[in-house]
Image (cartoon, rainbow, N blue to C red):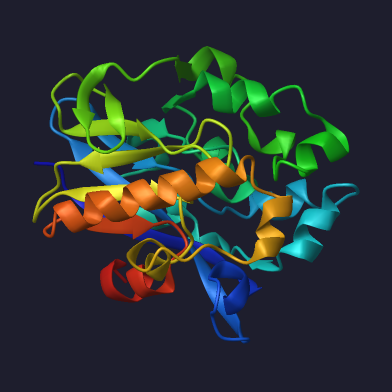
Length: 272
């Protein structure tokens, strides 16, 4: 089984009712979590890289400074994944692989902190952003400066999901061919977004990225605020992924579902 540790890499400020239809009209701190995992053969790895102080550098000038205005953030160096992993007796050089759920800035800001890691992402997700400089990339919440200069040579791009199915999502991508970490398609929020089903110590975990922002979203089938339709890739696919997530959770009571930005998950599961 795979040990999984959730790390909170920082937060942004947002209105609760923007994250969840019917939520309260109050500003809350929205965490940005990553999952640190250890595979017995392939070593230490991450699901997403989270915030890093590098995102402040990448948003210092226009047009990318708009990102900082829209999502006011706190990304101190002590919260970065590269700093926190010292608690586990490892350094950034020990992280050998990173799964990228999608290329929004808050999920990739820490990539440059791990110079020896291999990256895994879908081809669809990467091709959707790699040729979008300036405002075009910003509209996809993508900041080109956050990707390592040698990103292309260090990355495996997933084209298909043909391994054993995880219903109701269908086929999976078996990351290491042993069934312990299986990637699934979670389209809608961002083109080519993926989640991960992990055979974790203590019971299975599903890392759901931004298929919903808070756990009540999939539990109660409640979408985010209608304004989010302006930034998601596909509204219908977003709803379909949310419904599938609810079906998966209901059919597997022992499964722990971890949305990246859920304060409830942070408060219950993040190790401090």
